[in-house]
Length: 363
Image (cartoon, rainbow, N blue to C red; front, side, top):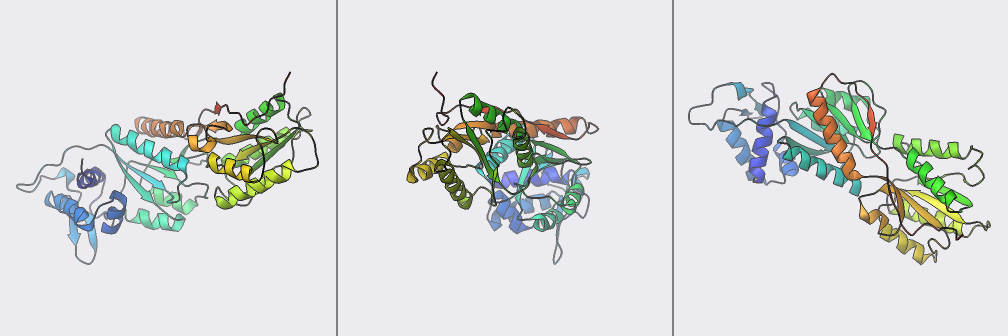
């Protein structure tokens, strides 16, 4: 299917739910989202206009006519029946994990006979502006990448669809689903693993930026610091005032170097959240003459199916990006089948990938 045909199919699907007078997205936004030239978009729009599905009004814009239920104009091609329309709303600065989830989700929706439109937004105000130009659709999966989602943005989404699903752990309210993961279980699992391998001093390095999944991880780590069997081994968590970035990586490396060169002589270990390139992490450690696991053991809190995170070396505890995509798709389908089902937050399964970055005491 060509890009023009894909755009035509998407707009025809949206037209099944559109009310007369609903505005189409701008030509510029359709060019960007479908990676088409202006003549390509105009060709697709002309085909819909010929079928009586849209009407262009000079000075005002292009609108749906609500003509799906009307008889086609003489000589016009009858539009085929199409699946449901799904908006994938995401931040443009996507991580590897976010990109993998979105790509897999888009493929599953398409394979299931439904249509998707991926829409990028820079902040909540921009999202509300973008949504104003869109007609109603059957579902929205929103990927906000650590940022807060104001009530006004959710209200704008609610005016466009009955089904909102958040990609990631979220304090859900009325009529919103969320599929995600939390770092509490991986933090506890990794901590007990390190203790069982004979480590005397354990550190936890993560972001200071507040979001639910991370807060649950910090909460469980602080609980472990108060439990009698683990309190003596766990140090105060280090919170880095940045999200995954070059600045974040450098801060992690400097903190690890400080831990290694500290005065204590016990076997040391660190839990790391936010590593996107295991290769860069290893290069940074090598440049600082830090040997893993001889000088310090490292366990990553990350994604089990993104090989670049662990680089075939680091022990990793966390979640699968593909599991996340499949769970989002399953929730969307189940919501269509049973609109009255309770809303809520669902966590995906934890995974562990072993690696030689963890020291083991010899018998």
